Each structure stands twice: as structure tokens, then as C-alpha cells.
Length: 137
Image (cartoon, rainbow, N blue to C red):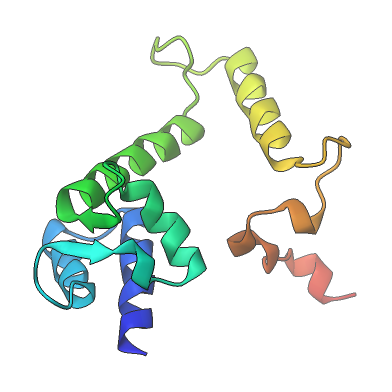
């Protein structure tokens, strides 16, 4: 139970970037049972194995603090690019940049290419989210 909680915290910290570096290090230490500065990817469940597999930059089956920090930075940059899709890097987002980014995101979500996004095509963490209006039906 503690390791599941720690893995969830680690994934959350890496994905959101809201914790201070000390918090990330502390949570990393909870998973690093033998204290060698590495977490064995093979010891994790499928969801966390996929997530941390992305961090395993050298492919050795372990994730170091440095690799986790690098993944965190990459995810933060990707998130920022989605929030502010300034493709030509001129400091403003024009209509075309905004629409191109929205179109790319739609295409990414439309896994079967039918021009529609079903609930099953949404990322797992978004599937349970419903609009308030839906609750009244």
C-alpha cells in the first residue's frame, strides 16, 4: 500500500510539477527501497512501468533522480507548449496557431480516425470527468 501511494505521488509530482525539489526527492526515496538512487522499472505495475519507462532515458531498466528530473522538465515544456501554442515563437498566439494546435490535439485523441472522439479514446485520467450538466440527466 505504501509503495502504491509513493508511486502515485511520484507520478503526480512528475506530471504536475507543483512540488518543490525537496518533495520530489523525498517521494523518490520512498520508492528507492535499497537507497541506491535508482528505481527498478520492472518492479512496477503496468501503468507506472509505462510512465517511468519514459523516464528511463538510457534504457537500463532503472530510473535515476536525474532521469526523473529530465522527464519532469520535458513534460513541463510540453504542457506549456499546449497552453500557449506559439509555433513561430513571436510571443503571441494568432488564430492559425491556436487552431492548428487544437486540430493536432483532436487528431491525437481521435485514435480510430473517424472524426469523432469517444469517451474510450480519452486518456484514462480524463474518462471519469463529466460536465455538471450530465449529472442532472
